[in-house]
Image (tube, rainbow over all chains, first blue to last red; front, side):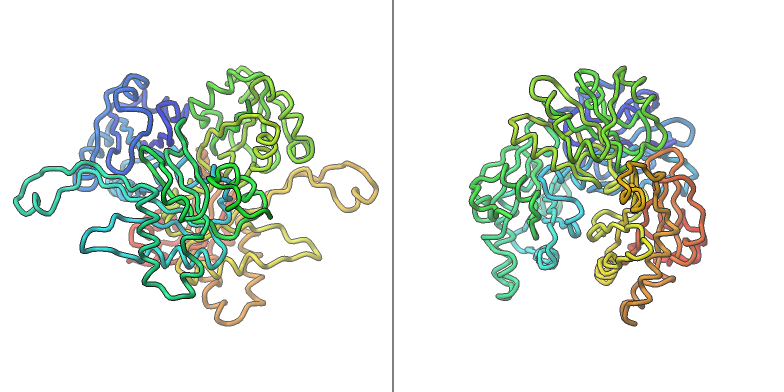
Amino acid sequence: MLYLIGLGLGDVDDITVKGLKIVQSCDRVFLEAYTSLLISSGVESLEAEYGKTIELADRELVESSANTILDPAVDSNVAFLVVGDPLGATTHTDIILRAIERGITYEVIHNASIMNSIASTGLQLYNFGETVSVCFWEENWKPTSFVDKIINNVKRGLHVLCLLDIKVKEISWEHMAKGRKVYEPPRYMSVNIAIQQILESMKEQDEDERKVLNKDTLCIGVARLGSKEQTLKAGTLGTISSEVFGEPLHSLCIVGNLHELEADMLRHFAVNKDEIPVL
Amino acid sequence: MLYLIGLGLGDVDDITVKGLKIVQSCDRVFLEAYTSLLISSGVESLEAEYGKTIELADRELVESSANTILDPAVDSNVAFLVVGDPLGATTHTDIILRAIERGITYEVIHNASIMNSIASTGLQLYNFGETVSVCFWEENWKPTSFVDKIINNVKRGLHVLCLLDIKVKEISWEHMAKGRKVYEPPRYMSVNIAIQQILESMKEQDEDERKVLNKDTLCIGVARLGSKEQTLKAGTLGTISSEVFGEPLHSLCIVGNLHELEADMLRHFAVNKDEIPVL
């Protein structure tokens, strides 16, 4: 049996009671370690809380050698822990499909993810269009397709959740060329870099699009959502671009049409309250 | 202090460890009882698990007399329990704003909600457009605006989560006219009724729109998501319209452009596997 268990966003206590009981009853416990980081809790504190040894599952293990996780699930209970929800920002459909193919039963223990906790901004989930990923630009690779999606949503009055890039266990081209498995230090995109890339991308857009998305567009920068150190700052892209958000993880919401209660909530997070319209 | 605590979707064990600790330390515990129902757990089992008396907060209490909840939060700890996530399908921004106005600090303890757990269908959250609410048609009131939103999303290749109407503590026009506070039995919209209303609405749409959304459009009907009795059935609207889903709560996803892994997952839930394309 394979259990995919969401850990929620904050710390060791954000697992559900059901999830905790299952982890404690499992023979092997893996932690998905490559797309997210547990904000306040290290692996040691999880091990102490669960009374279990935790095996770290990096991208390579999950994507290439999923059998390390699936083999023991054939005749014993295996927990696969994922920060947030197991099917949230990073979907683990792939490992579920492999489990099904091998006749291994599975159960998903859901939890909060960035995809619903973003409602803490005061923006209502009903008013969000599709979620957008913003990836780090490289020197010779600066994709701007994400701004088309943002513009499309904002034109329709919808808010946009932008998930910001995470680079963990990346190998530089230089090392790769030399066949060296040397990992770069992890990188997490900040709200500031995301806004910079968005505004830079807008330079290539038409006038009409630039009316919809520009430095005066409202947004809310989000850091460490769901943890005690959660930080929310609302204002124009221009204002928020120079705010300090501190440690990762960061996310960014671009604001579409505001409803009254949404505006009232945003005002509480505003760097400059005058920037939030009174509706 | 006011704590808004998500209970998750399934049963009494779906609360987070953090949420449980807080409930147990609170002086008063209210349960939001009007927009959702806890699938497997009655109030008594929650009271037994928490060792606390739970006060039911119906729509009237939360919307008109929020002070019943807020007054004790001025100088003691109050838990306001919400099925799913406190800011998910039903947003409780209103009570938060009133708390802020009164200088009462608050904290949100997030949990899984239908808005992210819907990923259990295999459809990826990234590929969803805005969420749509489908309300019960009355004899002389048959709003069809929800299909415009569905069509708009499906045209863009996006999936659509349809939240289905819940009528709890409704008073009929007849009783209301006579000033009688007599509540109708609760009603929960089924997948079948939702599909019937969608297909009926399409009769008034243009040919182009009817090409996008019709009885051959793929969907997945969802019942009791997140509980042990969870039921998922995929197929065309025509096929799913006559399937039996049993007890509430039901939801419905209209499928946009399918990606390979999504199709592979849908096939596992298909009433007739031939209806799901092989990608």
